[in-house]
Image (cartoon, rainbow, N blue to C red; front, side, top):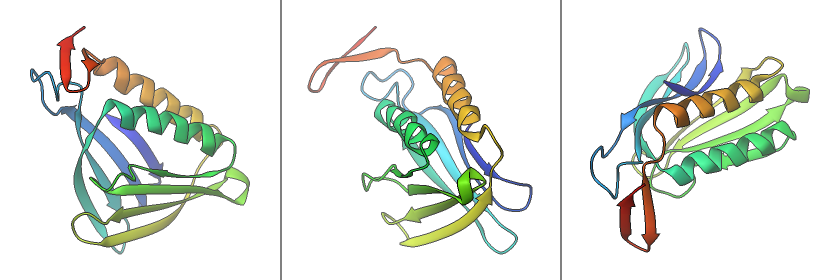
Amino acid sequence: MELVRLGDELNGVVVRVLGRFGAGSLQFHDHLAAEVVVATEFVSGKLDLVLTPADLQDWEHALDALAAGGGVRWLDGGRSPEVQLSVLERGRLVRVTVLDEPVSGVSVTLDLPVTSGWVDDHRARLRSVREAWPSEVVESSPGVYRWR
């Protein structure tokens, strides 16, 4: 399931959720296995990542900032590839940078066209991911987990 899809048939960035990362394990059950895919006519690559419930919350806040015309840094905790987005040309273009600081040190920047309503489309994608993999674990105190 695609959480993020920016670009067109030739150039784009996709964050695809693959399923639960630690299904059945209290501590990691609500974590999601995912991948970020960058594809251009010149370069392409794929990086694995794990999305936490906090990452999904951060993406929701990032969408609010992008809707207001701001820029965001998402997944910038140093444990996974970081995604930076900024709105250009009155919302018709988005600059996306994917940085793999933790492993390779490589970064790729793309200016990608977006259509009207692209932020709302991504809010719907986020809702779909949350519906497909709802939170089923509660951290009742630091390091103590239980099923909902």
